Length: 238
Image (cartoon, rainbow, N blue to C red; front, side):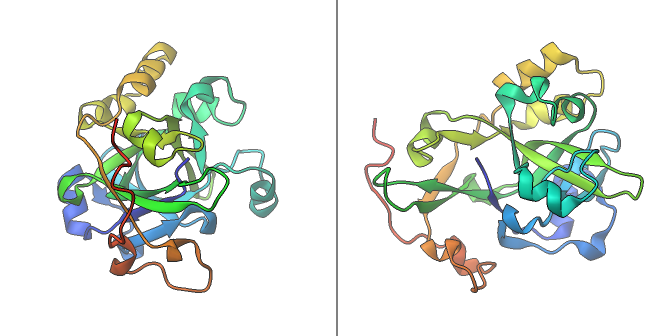
């Protein structure tokens, strides 16, 4: 699962990195910590307009979910599992027709020192906090209202050590596969191949951050939330 992200880069850096233009630049603000449970905007490159970046509300709403609040009380669509995308009534159609890149420069995963105890958040990022893209899917309606889900898959060794309870990780696309994910001619076999083989080749880093991340009533959207606060030195030992 992946319910919390960061995107700290300035707009000019994002546009330069992606080669795409933000359609509504006035709504973009960098963030250090964003929780999906507030259903915020993510910034995404859609399959049908790969030269633009659009705000999409995190938490895909199905076409039949006319009452958004009632729909989200019943369904958690912040993440969509790669293993069942093509067989899911919720996700199969957008997976085939409406894929997107969800932009970020970091995300947070829970680690459990004791599986029955509280979790400790870890911040995960690339060297120099480079931008990357999650594989995503989206829906839209006649009013140009976009909602998206972030795709997750079984964790590799590194992320299984961090997210050691459910052992999942978000599908961060290697740059060589970003164009393929947005290829409108991709068939089911091609989709399955990308889902299975496209995870970022560059190694991720991770460090422990404060549990204040989980507290209500405090501002977690600050640079301090990303600071390392210690951690298990044996976490990644084989």
